[in-house]
Amino acid sequence: VLTFYPLTERVVKALRGSRTMGALAMSLGVTALVLVPTILLLSLLVSEATETYERLQQVVQEGGQTPLQASEHWLAAAWRSLAERFPALARVDISDIWLQASKRISQWVASEAAALAQNLLSSALSAAMMLVALFFFFRDGDRIAALIRELIPMAPSQKERILKRVYDTVSAVVQSTFMIAAIQGVVAGLGYFVIGRLGTSVLLGFLTAVSSLIPVVGGALVWLPTALYVLVTGEVLRGVLLLLWGAIAVGSVDNFVRPLVIGGRVEMPTLLLLFALLGGLQVYGFLGIFVAPVVVAVLLAFVDIYRETYVNTEPSVAFGDAG
Image (cartoon, rainbow, N blue to C red):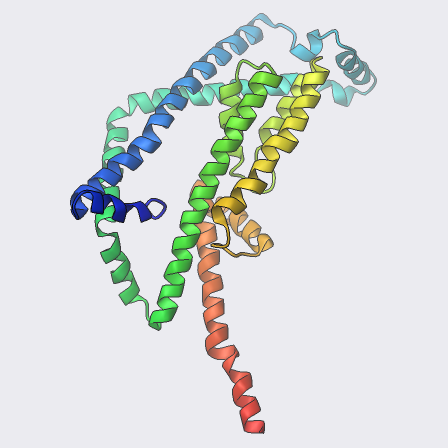
């Protein structure tokens, strides 16, 4: 609601000043904007996950060799030769790790899709509650904000500063987080499909988008082992190109998109934000990505207000007494 709220006034004006109709239009529009791509993506994910799971299950049941064991490429042969000399390396089979990870991910996607279909009534109730909440927040957002503003026991200018900091932080973090995740997923998926020629490019692109939400490592959790898998199974050129694609194309999305979306709205020390995100993920899970920046923003606003009210006034009084 905070992210799309600036559009509400325009929609209300277009609907002759009816806030009820404007809130209804905004709720349905935002839901469609999220729901339609989600349904299309889920259908592709379920299809790829089911196909991958069946293929991997067949390989496991037949006791076949992993791609690294079966590859005739010199790189794979060199790895097997090292594994014979050093028994510890024999237990590390990158392609087997990739296959097992793909199997578990495919199982998870298939099971989640089945659970969603089985719990259709619960999902429908949750969706209905979300729509009701969206409607009332879009319609009565100004009144709710005014009530919160009245309850804050501070000066009017300080209240406005804190609420503005919260609004700017939430909208900027939501916009940048989902935009970066979506772009990284698409860019990585194109690399998996065009360069790596992998049949699970949609699934891997989705996982790259999800992992991009994790601080520090981000999408490298997916594109790096995938590129290594392609590399050690004999496709050296494709593996190297995929490594470069991940490091340059996927990795640079954050550097270009985040400043463009956030701009100067959110000014936070990078180290403080990093620790806040890590702590937020540990305490709140996925919601910590959005809760942590808000907590830091409010904390910094309180620090600024304290300095202006108590710290910066003391030196001037002291110097005045001395004079």
